Image 1 (cartoon, helix red, strand yellow):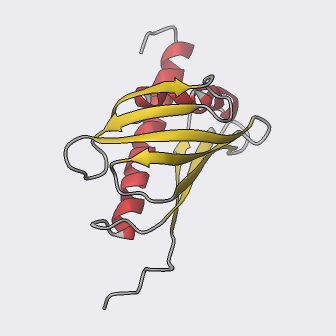
Image 2 (tube, rainbow, N blue to C red):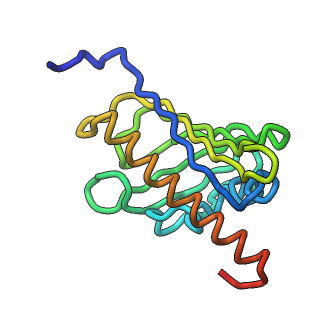
Image 3 (cartoon, rainbow, N blue to C red):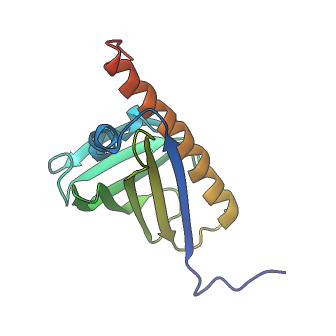
Length: 165
C-alpha cells in the first residue's frame, strides 16, 4: 500500500558509540567541516568552497558514491550553526544531484559517562526522494555513521599511541 508522501517529511536519527574516545577528543574531528572525507567512508572528496572551516555560513563541496544518482553523487552543504558547548553542528544541502529538495542535518557528540567513551548522534529531515525508500536512507546513514565512528576512533587512538593513521 503506497502512502501519500506529498506533505510527508522523512526524518531519521542514528547513533554510534566510540568506546575509547572522549567527547572532547571527538568534537574537533567532527567540527572539521571541510574534511568530512577523511572520516566518512563513501566520500571521495570534501573541501571548502566558501568561508572559513567550522564557521557558520561556510560551504563545502562533497563528492562520493553513497546515494544513487547518475554517476558520482555530489552536494554543496552550508554550515548553519555550531555549538561548541553542546558539541553540535547543523548543516543544510543547498545544491546536489542526489535528489534532495530540502535537507537539514544535525550531528552531535555526547558524553557517555565516566571512562565510557562518547556517542555520535546524527539526525536529519528531508523531503521524500524519488527512487529512495525512507528505511533504506536511514540504513545508509546508520552504516555510514558506524564506519565514521570507527575511523574517528582509529585516528584518535593512533595519535594518542604516537602512530600515524
